[in-house]
Length: 304
Image (cartoon, rainbow, N blue to C red):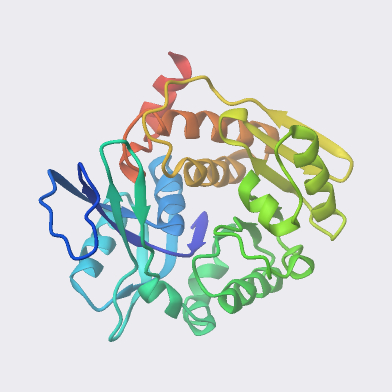
């Protein structure tokens, strides 16, 4: 196995409405969509669609969404043997309401994701030992994240930590054990308490994290590309110019693609350039996982 993603899965319940209902009001809405998401699942699918051999360690609930979530991962080639059911718990869901001005209101229910425990990592230990890279995010409990980092260090496995959603009490000194720390600019601001409105401010905030022991800091900046900071060195990658239709999940696309190419050749700048282009390609379609190109589609995008 190339990559293990230890993280979340969610079911997006998207209602499109002309007007948001008032308190106590019932309205008819013109459209609805059900999608599969969650940062962990998104990253796993992105890497798998590019051809990586990916396994996932995750939790689903004891409800009708669980089977659909597992089948969705499997159809993209993700190994789901360690996606297990949390009894008497709902799956992670995100009811999303979008009005005719494209303004949205979102509720996040972690559900089974909050039940992913260190014991689940231990149960998957033999499979995890065969992986070359573990990818983590923060939609699962922090003790499970820390336990996974310890496991990876013990067995010499590289780790990418995407600190999303960012939490101010993340133990930076502890997670500096990770090989790659990959926030976006908003997460960087939350983690450091510093402004990030300009490139110099981004770099200043990045230096604060590096001073606390981080090895490789990759900051994704949306349409402004990405920055890799290591020691005193700074490497910039520009974003590919595209007409964006839906930016949902672009950061996850970047990380999943980066993980795939890091395993392929280990060249960080090349992996970043590929990831930036892959994220750009993803925003030209609607949705998250459904907008992620497979290897052939991505090749056509690069050569167009």
